[in-house]
Length: 458
Ligand code: ADE
Image 1 (spheres, rainbow, N blue to C red):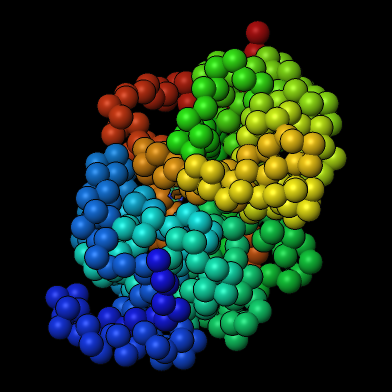
Image 2 (cartoon, protein in one colour):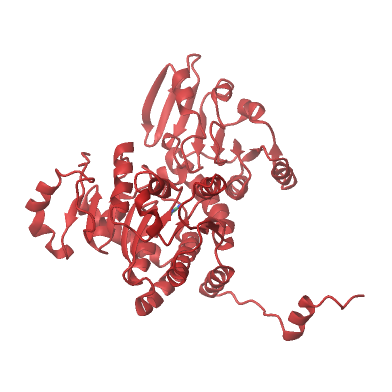
């Protein structure tokens, strides 16, 4: 597929698009950077002809996102984001499309780019543009230059609020677009890796904009990181390889919320799970959760499937590849493609055979062993499958939408990393329970009083 490195301007209504094909073909020649800023809706997607399939998928997952749908109705009436230009750098999936629809219903002018070059669902990107009037700059498999050009295209819209998944957009806002930083009310960060980066910026005194750590909300990481990553990581591995996990030795590196989810779901499928974890408390938790815990140098010799979810670099390195068995599967579910040392793997290999089956590359070692890398070491759940299920993204994205409304009400927050207000968390959890048909008890006044008093004893 030929990806045209241009932003294609879309004038007023999407019905006009066909008639304007000739104009747009000329415009394809212009580079993203050369486009005038402030254009209402512009885009760079793989193929608008894919939109019908994308729309079907967006509406399908919408049924599984009842909390977000409810907020969308409310936003439609109340317009809490009226006139606000918003820039989002998220995985461009059907679930993200429903978040963008919600922000737009709230009155925002939304532009969206991908937070990973390999996670974009091209049909969804096309439908977001064609059916929902959202500016999208994202093409699955885009190279590094295009990826950054797309981020720049979002920032050229001069957003007053941003959403990020991995902090790449905020990083660009601190470098090439730093002149705009003072105008940003706040940015919301979706993932652990991003929050870690932003806290490091805060500690270094480098942070120039207020940030809300959406990832750290309980309605996000307790569900999305654990159940979302847990299921979707294995979904990606299974879709790419068809492997029967039962009976395998599956090694999970990292026992944060994502690692816990992956380890427990792998065990559920019958894998014999080994956890490799550098934090002594987490390692102990893994042991008491019933997992084998080992150093990677020991696990490397016995594992059949390796899954990294640490957020750190080179968790699987040359010394480990040297020990691995023939046929080993290597997958990463951390945000960046640095957890598996791919340059070392490439250097060690006699030959690299691409796409031995879709999304699986074979690294032939000089001694005849074959190591298989899934999704080029990028997030396996999005590179080889469709990411977290909609039911869980419902909670993450409802949290994002409510935080956007809160920020719009507050005005510019102090420049620091903020937590999500607890009433946002309570509202999302309550709405989700309601949507699931679950009723819970409430405390009586007497019980509330008891909990807040200190004098009642034995
Ligand atoms: N991150 C993980 N899964 C996702 C999904 N389905 N949509 C957007 N972001 C995600």
